Length: 531
Image (cartoon, rainbow, N blue to C red; front, side, top):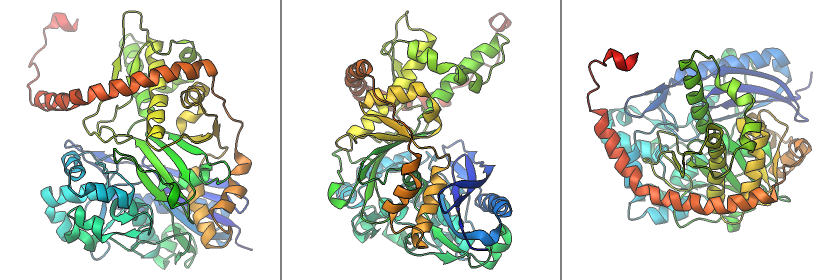
């Protein structure tokens, strides 16, 4: 039987998936496991590295059993980005992996952002400093947990760890290796950047950079036994999940030059650059610049929270109903929301969607940033607030795109919120661009497989992979509404002005929260209050 199947692993924040694709791009089988991580009192967010590998091996076994292991041509691996996963000289975890959600290094992020040479670092890396990055985590460990670094031999990311367990090869890819420590033009480490960050003593931890579209390694016998796949199977180290999702959803389209927005728990907003000359850095030194396979790049700005804001608001609604004995789930409320949202008043309140406890990182970096409603009065109703949250997500997307130069001609959209017709229309109108989804459920795994397919000669390059696997799946566009577009033009001015005005208050509120955290709660509450 000929090998005619490619498998992609996407180890995300919420779910670890293995997806099998035919050579024509059809999804043939999917297996998944819920991910789990621990949130610590100091803002840390950590994940058990061994369990992550075991869950990955389990989903691969399930998919291999469904499609037949002898039919598999190659395997591609991607996973959640940023974070720090340390291993010792024997390849064993030094500690649990630190996720991109980890917020404990906020002070270190500020310190790095104020270094005298940080302007040069940004010009070389093409990426700003954030609290979630390995360079920030390593500085925190240097100050607060040097014992971890003493035991560590290599600093990996999630997908790098899985690649090591699959192949025995320690490496990272041209996206994550470069945007923290490298030169986006050469796609390699920059000693100037590492020195400017003050991390030269930790240079020994950085693994080689490996381009999975050019080179693959063999599945080890031990990994073959764990996954049910044949030993020697070619395995490609994919790019970070944001980039593989962009590939799987059609950002690499030189003809259309689209933008790409992910509205999941977090928000990602990306523009296509055909080569280095089209990369546009900004004065605020924010965002990321990452390469595609080949000469093209993606520039992106990321929101710490997108649909997390909707989840938060629906959770409040469920709590209020539950207090009155009415049982509803957030999913129950969400199903009927679109009509109410579109009937509500835009501008009845203004919402800045910085609900994450880690603050914000796009298009500005501020760990103390927090969400807020402004402009309310006694006529503001519940559905006006819900509409403000939807509007806030669209205005935050416009804020991010504005930091990356001219708006793309159209926006490709994915993520859980892409299913909402109301949100698609609001986003299209706020950006004044058509919004188009792609009929593919597993874009991240598809992108990892496309990279593996380039390495195996299934595709000549990323452009051909897009033409064959993505373009046929593009769905009809949602066009902007002219009246709403005029409304959002006005709201966007106020959105930006209010964001700037809130910045001093965020720092003061952070100090206030720190003080309140130490304040004692009442030992008893009078019964008449509780009645």
